[in-house]
Length: 309
Image (tube, rainbow, N blue to C red; front, side, top):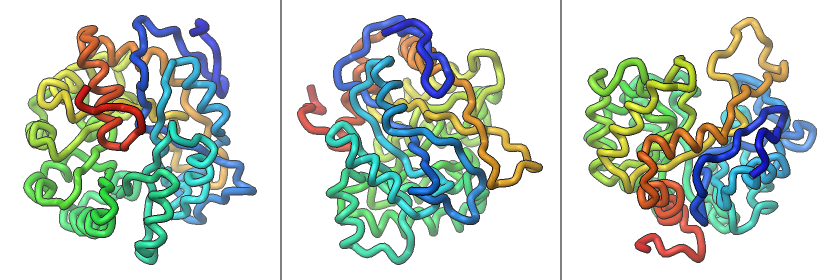
């Protein structure tokens, strides 16, 4: 890979290890153009454009062969941008949609044919911190997607996850939890709720994304996120995923900014992000392959990969 090449104005460093074949970035978004794919009127922010072409350039630099597109909150339940990107990317891509109450089984089946394999429940993005209401949302979506063999994905606070520990284990589908379960890196492994997250990972019913350490750490190079990552890896090495969270929307929004004003992306180095993962697994090639290749192949059903290999 070329040292320091930029994508969307952000430079990404060269990898310090050999990327395993079939590696997957399980958390990206594609945005715009707004004239073709309009955003929801009541969105929390307006992103700049981030195209499929930009994504392919990034993944070419990093040596990533597979990708999971996640429906971002500014589009609400309008999945047209997601589905168009899946058509463009073909068999290398899978999708996670956000579905509304009116979507029929036929609608969901059409999404499945397009490559969608899960439904996202945006609890944190919607400011939903009430465990009972969060559980209602998770149960409703899980019941609707279970016939398709999908999973549910959620972005939720650690306190909500911990409060719902037993109920999550009773869901009829697996649950994928975004961004380290929002565990505070500074809080370490003894923080309230983290033991519940580790228990869920160890159960095999829950997977956690080692993605976006910028959302849990404020230290340079997110140095304290490694403690959280290593604890999760120890709890369930076959139940972890990795993702860039590209194109890195802001983690701290300016309340004075109009939601219609375009919000710039943050300058995260995704080459360095992969090197961090390599450090978290202490250079273990088998463990790296499990996180980057085997587990996403099993969960998202990518072709040509034997998950047991």
